[in-house]
Length: 335
Image (tube, rainbow, N blue to C red; front, side, top):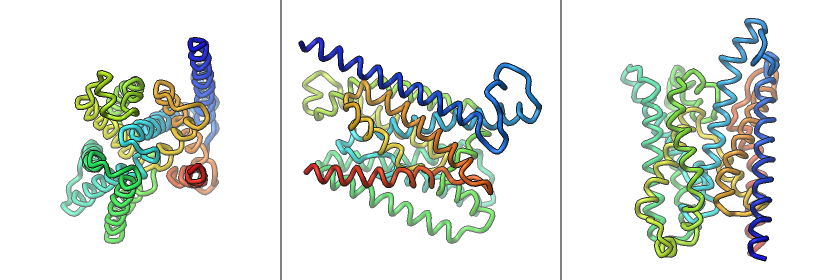
């Protein structure tokens, strides 16, 4: 009987993963074809005009792949943080990690502009990583004081508000030349990460693949640190690795696309409500669904208005805020 139930559950998870994979492939096809210049997918296997070749290979394909990678990273980080911090509302944006990364990157931009120094782009990614690491370590230290999920969430929100306040001051005091660079970090866009070398993506892809295979360990951590230790998990060694992996992916996402909210919160929650919370399923499913959501959001951002591109952060926040409110109402109604 138990074996049959387990087999049925595995079949259900496989069906979900198959459906999410099909949805992601559909979103990628839409993203490759739709835009200011229509390009058919046939550009992959037959000659087309020089303009279509340029649009497809130099703009559309790198941007689509970046949307897939950033969306997968944000959703996966949200799923891992919710277990790591024992807080179902944790995600890189809501608890201040994205804000810390953005603040560090904008501070670096501000200092380099005031000194008249042109910094390489990798320095912004490094600054974003340091900012994300500081906020994450602070939240972990608070989590170990057993303040409770509500208090921890409030600390994270307060850190995010403080970081956003400093960002607003920097924005207010910036000159016109710096203002454009600052707005990139504030609103989010996939257009700025495209020119970077593909070598920038390799550490993020490697981290993503490592993190998605930690489902069994996260299932043990979800039982509590004490029980996880009793079941043979080396919590002291695993936690720093998970923190560093989340920081790296968050820093990569912020450095490539700016702070994009709600994907890390909404996607794991919806999957947990619809299909269950076993981490072996939730992690790859979050990765696929997050990539699909951000790819579709980017398609909307590029095609919603004829006069120009809408910031992708505005699209995800507009779509994600009603879902977030629904989640809060559902959560408090259950209690």
